[in-house]
Length: 313
Image 1 (cartoon, rainbow, N blue to C red):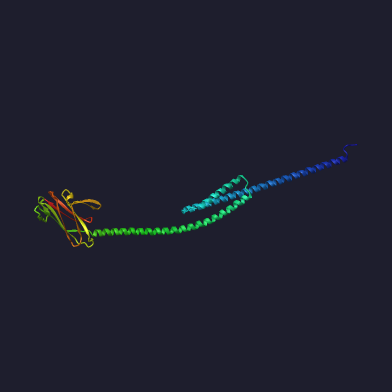
Image 2 (cartoon, rainbow, N blue to C red):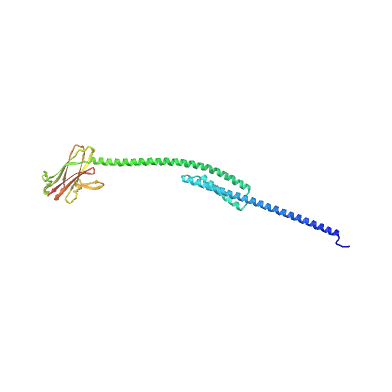
């Protein structure tokens, strides 16, 4: 009897068919499992990608917030103002940024996302309120600047007016001073000899050896502008060598003319009364006079009011 009977061949076919079914089933299961694994991997990758996008977007939001708060700080500083709370907010946002950037290397959970979104929303509200405050401050500053500019303009105008007034007042004072200048009229120079007799000479020429004293006589012209008050008149007797006779023992000294010292030979005090009053000087040199031309100058109130000359031969 043959071993390869139809029955055995039929059983073999069934076995092979069963194995094929099992293999196909296992392969299907493996394909399904691989598909599930791939799908899960893609889902996880998508979750990671979404989280990374959320993280990067949140970082950008905080970077923009920090830049805006720093802008506000600069705007306040430009107006000469400081705000400690603003600096505190900038520091807080900087700390949040450091923490967010740290999530690039670790898990960024949904709880973390909600926390930072809520904080960003609060910062944005504070930013909006501060912007409104700054706009109002800038408007107030503009009003103050305008008022200050107008005030400075007014002040400059007043200063200019004051300078003009002072200049006009100074000019007026100078004019009054010039107008009030006294004038010596009818000025005569005579000599007194050793016998005490006064000699006159129409040519104003005298013999030096006969001169004991010099007498200067003059009248003050009328001047309605000059104040009626005590004054001093200075006489300078200038010798032929150009030097004024000067002797402290006989009352000589110095006075100011245009800010400079000038020596005088003699002086006398008087009260100007605008009556064309007559004044005189009698000067004793107590020494022999030099031959040549002598000059007599009279000064009061800083002005020369008269001048004459005579010759000693």
